[in-house]
Amino acid sequence: MSIAESASARADAPFVEKTPEMIAATLRGDQPSLVGLTRAQLKDALASIGVPERELKMRVSQLWHWIYHRGARDFADMLNVSKHLRADLATRFTLDRPEVVSEQISVDGTRKWLIRMQPVGPHDKGAEIEAVYIPESDRGTLCVSSQVGCTLTCSFCHTGTQRLVRNLTAAEIAAQIVVARDRLGDWPGAVRPTDGLVPDADRAVSNIVLMGMGEPLYNFENVRDAMEVVTDGEGLSLSRRRITLSTSGVVPNIVRAGEEINSMLAISLHAVRDDLRNTLVPLNKKYPIKELLEACRNYPGLSNARRITFEYVMLKGVNDSDADARELVRLLKGIPAKINLIPFNPWPGTKYECSDWDRIEAFSEIVFRAGYASPVRTPRGRDILAACGQLKSETEKLRARARLMLETGIGAEGVYAAGAGEE
Ligand code: SAH
Ligand code: SF4
Image (tube, rainbow, N blue to C red; front, side):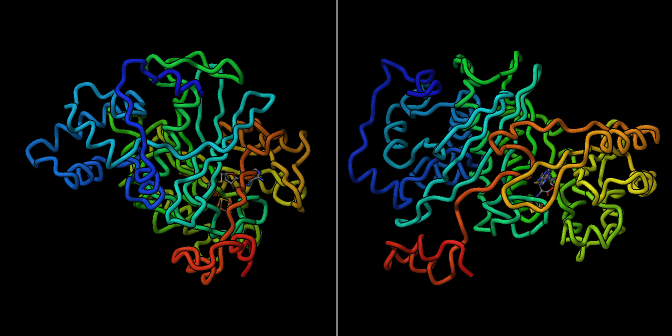
């Protein structure tokens, strides 16, 4: 039994045993999980099982509290919900989380979870993504994925070698935080794990970065809705200032993100000239540096206290000269900015190398003397391929025909093997 399970298990809780029909219904998607849903979706779910309109708001509030404040895993625990409704809920829905297929703990305490989403059809095995937990002494940051794979093909990024399988739903994005809190005993009364590192703070998960697999601004609505769930003050209750969305530069959605998501923003810049950025971040051909920086200048609510972080991966002999550093400073003039230098994290098959340490220091010094804080991001979890840009799962894009076969259930056996990685 996991820590989280033991923490929420109640000896006196009535136990609803799942019948084979109920298990089959879950697999068919007829008995969906409520974990990760927005308030509006939760309301619809309750209305669909006949909860009267006049009760809906109150019932949503109750469920919200149990799911997102208490981390409940069993409807039977929801003692302020009537017995009758609890029984109804248990036959029609679950509180299942996406499955943690594996957990790796780095020598530095970083944890990487391979998470399998619930299957979307009878023959789907469930898409897999990775989420990473980075503990420090006084805070813990969860790096969340927004897509399975990525449509973009940044040449230095491991995720970029895995083609996009699909967007994650809002519930699947929000559920990553629930899963992390389960594993870290981060619910009221739950027990913290004794292995790895968990900060000595009220909350094990105090910050979120949308820096896992995928481009969050190409899954805009789902990311926005998930952040709505995560920031709700009666549930997971994370401040928007503790959420950082990183984008490779989807210009039309940057200002919109400021208006509708209102998180902190990080831009994967990585190069100061269009010709080089075109090769490192091919999206630059569509939205070149000038347009990108213009969108940044227009990001709502910018001030010295609310700066944009510019991420810059240090690639040996590629983008790490003194001239690059000086040009970086010139480009960012007038934008309230922080510069985050990221030592390149190698992955199997890459052609790049990380800049030497004295080169990173020299680069950092130029940036620092121009008045920017220029922290070098300490690589975390490199030994378990959990550092920036190292994430990738085995879930491969299926050919359209194979996917159709899967969805209709025709000849599903062997399709994974046949379709994996093909055009
Ligand atoms: N798709 C989004 C967010 C995910 S990547 C984006 O590109 O911004 C999070 C950060 O890690 C980005 O700045 C990305 O450029 C960087 N990154 C990718 N691969 C890396 C690698 N191998 N080493 C170091 N940083 C990397
Ligand atoms: Fe996608 Fe970001 Fe990786 Fe580029 S760096 S391939 S946008 S995940």
